[in-house]
Image 1 (tube, helix red, strand yellow):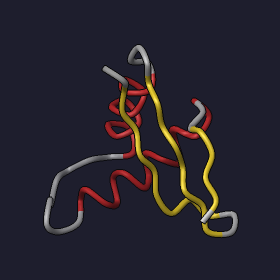
Image 2: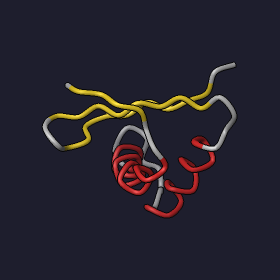
Image 3: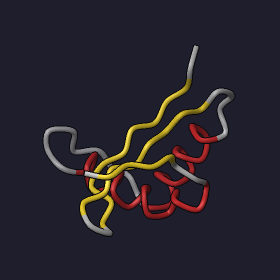
Image 4: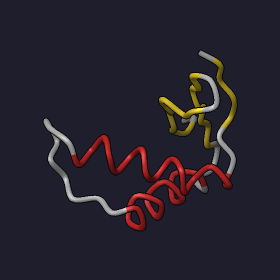
Length: 69
């Protein structure tokens, strides 16, 4: 798997992945693409944000996002 840092332009695609993951069992939450993108944007704009994307081929398969304390 290849990785790279998250950029702001990645947020719409990451929001789709986020919503798909957290709307499924065991979480069964109720994210839309818009609410997920808003949440990820908040995280992205947190001071000392760090995030990486994992790729399989050209497809995003995973990401991790957070901030340094």
